[in-house]
Image (cartoon, rainbow, N blue to C red; front, top):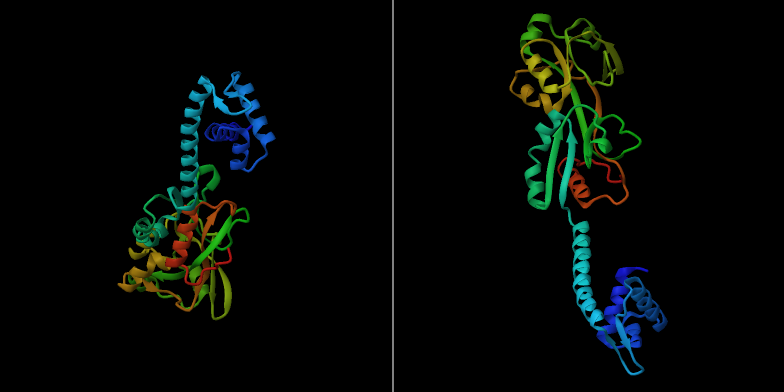
Length: 300
């Protein structure tokens, strides 16, 4: 027996003074009403209704039970309506993981407008360059800069990152400017720890794609650290546009082999399941596509 359903039947019987009238109101059979009331009285071990051939009325216990049923059913209906409305509107805490430098350079400026649009969403942005376990660490969404998203994740393409070679004028004056990709093998290079290419530079240019083995003079797991080391004249870096653009614009860094770049890498919003995607997650992904992904893949 479903207690909530039985309570609704009992309330209908009391309010309509009979089984048949309650059955009509609930669009069920009179026999079904009779079964529900009998089961409810059996479960409670008490008589709730006085029955005569002419009318049905609650016992004293039934009258008290009726009052509580009306109150509880109203609260239950209000709860369901509230949860249903919440399920349709972006709300609640949204845990996001993103790379450190990308989060600082791109995401930080986008959050105020999203928050103004969806004030019921509590944003929790955690920045880390390591590959987090989204399920284990409780993230709703992650921003990944990666060539190929993991097959166990759902991915929405937001755009591309272009990675270019550059160095400080002081370094180039001291060591000379490379004229071919092969020249990089004899230069001091600064490497990103999490690079998929390992101890090599994969470059794309006029002659196609080439792989140049390098011996990094410095390794670091953060692109901004590498940028500052390069600005200080320590060596050549291959870093994304969002990390080096300003330094290139103000002359602290100079392009190296401008016709060559690391093959572009995709920016993805990734999440763990397409089923019952929470509105807070969907709304943030759509917002990122709106702001960042002019050529984003909307098929995901």
